Length: 411
Image 1 (tube, rainbow, N blue to C red):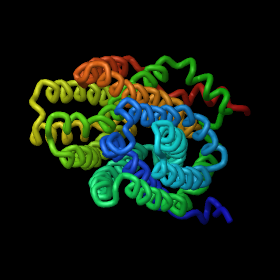
Image 2: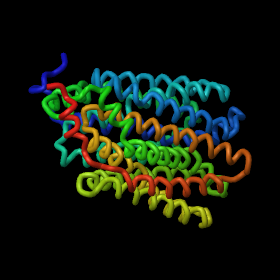
Image 3: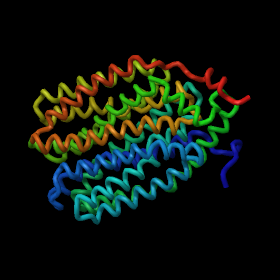
């Protein structure tokens, strides 16, 4: 039985369960790069093929977001998250039995990519953020986002240990068992988005979804947010998928790559919360621009430095602090401009752009390596895109459309 608004558990339960769901989902996902070399050696598939599977995963993860977000807005995120967690576990279990590049693309690519739409930021933020007072929404989004980094910090080293001890197939089966835990955790966010919507029905935010979509389509800042988030996706997928291989190619131990991914997660715990708080206190678009400019500087320094355990560690710490701080700021700007009633839908569209960028980051870097024998061009492209994203966020008009929504609402 769905609890009534008066009897529903406190918002912190939704926040805690949502953060743990994201911890598991993102923690497993961020360790996929550790499977590249073992799969390459066992199945004889090249990095471009593995990168294509990750690219398909990111693309499906993005293309499905607006539709899954709309389902969560209408029917509640609990059902969506439970289904996503179950499909995640099934996809990983099936991936453990593949014997070809096509099998990797279908399982780790399509199935896991579709599953992640229900258990990551769009659905979970849509569940948690509307329950929070306006002055604390950024911090709440930062906590949920940091959950993904907690998972990265804890689960990436565990994944490396599992790969070493169980082999890559056994490690995928262990990850499938962990993913199944997201199904009961989904009860903690069940119907939260619907409850939040009930609380806002008397506000100017209560307009039909069709009007909200038309407003977003006509808003230049919304398109600029989409473009900036495309760059973020490119960066995240490129680094998480290829950094371990970059470091092993330089003669470093495979454990250095795992440690680097774990450090990215650790420092993003700090960064996500810090930028979430900044979203409540500072002008979001300027903080977003600063993040992208800082990424360009960090990548540039890493590219011109020798690849050593020290430089890998420093790069991981710096890029980790900047890793997913864009999420509370970008989702916060969407909510600030358009309101939180359709946050899952509108942010889902922006997140789709993020994942299109991730497709090119994961597959494009592998394509570049296959044709040049180096990741140098991919790093240079990443730096140029970071500078462009920093510039694109500056002219965003971040004024709320609530007064216009009040006029559009039926009497």
